[in-house]
Image (tube, rainbow, N blue to C red; front, top):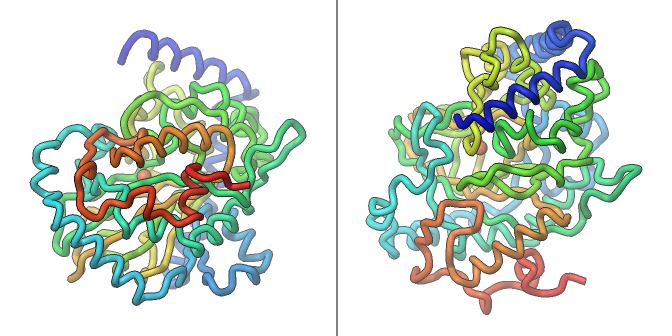
Length: 412
Ligand SMILES: [Fe+2]
C-alpha cells in the first residue's frame, strides 16, 4: 500500500470515528440489528421458506406495498418470467455458437492476467467471459421487457431530494457487462463474498461519507439505503473492472435452469448490512491503516476474520429458470458458489440498471465509442476479443431502443 493511501485511510477513520459519540457503542447497536436480521433469515432457512422476495414480470404493476417493503429490507429480488423460455433457449444456443465459432477459448489463453479485479478473492478467476456485444446479450440487454423491469426497479429508489434530481428513473442508459457460463462439475471458479461499486472508496470518498453519514453519526435507524442522494457523485479508483456507473441494481438473467449447488449466486439479503461492514472497520482491533481487508481497485472483501456474523446470512438463491432475473442493490454482499454440482451448464447474462444521470451518461458515451469499435467497454480489462468476431452486433443492427440506451440516437 502506498503511503498516501495509508495516510488517507488513517485520516478518514479518525474523521468517521469523530462523527459518533462512541464509535464502539455505535457499532454494537448496529451489530444487534444485524443479529436480529440473521436470526430471522435462519428461521426462514430452517423452515425452507423463501427469503429473497419474488415477483413475476406479468404482475409488475400489481406488486403490493408489503412486498415493496420487503424488497427494501432485503435489497434483492427475483423477477420471474421476464422472457419466454423458448426465446432464452435460442439465445443461449446463439451465445454458445458465438463463443465457439469465434474461437474464444484459444483467444482467452493468450490474454490471461489482464483482469486483475477479482485476483485477490480466494477462489481466483471465475468463469466469466469478456464478451459484451453478442446478439444474445444485446437482445436481452436492450429488450422492451428489460426496459420495463429496469424502470420499475429504478422507481424503488428516492431519486429526488431538496437539492437536486439524482436520476430519471424512467429513462434508461445501458451498461454492457459480461457473461457467466459454468460447466457442470466445475469446482474451481467460485467467487468469495464481496460488494462491487467501491471498496476503500466507501470510507475515504467524500460522497460516500455523505451517503453513509447517518450510519457513522449514531443515526443508523435514519439511514435509508434507497435514498440515491450523492450515489451519483462517488469517485472510484481507476482500475479495470471497477464500475464507473451508478447502478440502482446489479443483476443477471438466467439462460439455463440453475439452483442451489449449481454454482450459482449467493446473497446476504440485508440491505443495511453495509453499516456493519463500515463501522466494523473503525474498531480498535483493525490495523490503523487498514479496512478489514478492503483494497483499492479490488472488490470489497467480506471475510471470516472480520465479518463472521454477517456471513451467517449468506444464502443461495432459489432455483432459477431460463428467463428469470435476479437483482441486488449495490450494497448487497454477494458470492458465487465454489462448486457446481449440477448436471448442466449454469449460464447467465449480466445486466444492471443504470438510469439516466450525468455519471451514467458520461460513461455511456465512452462505452458507445467502444461499442462502435467492437472493443471491451471502458470499465473492463481491454481484452477486446470481439473486434473481428463474426456475429458481433454493429450499429446498423441495433433497435431504436438500443440506440437510445447507448446514446447513439436522441431519446427525446
Ligand atoms: Fe460482484
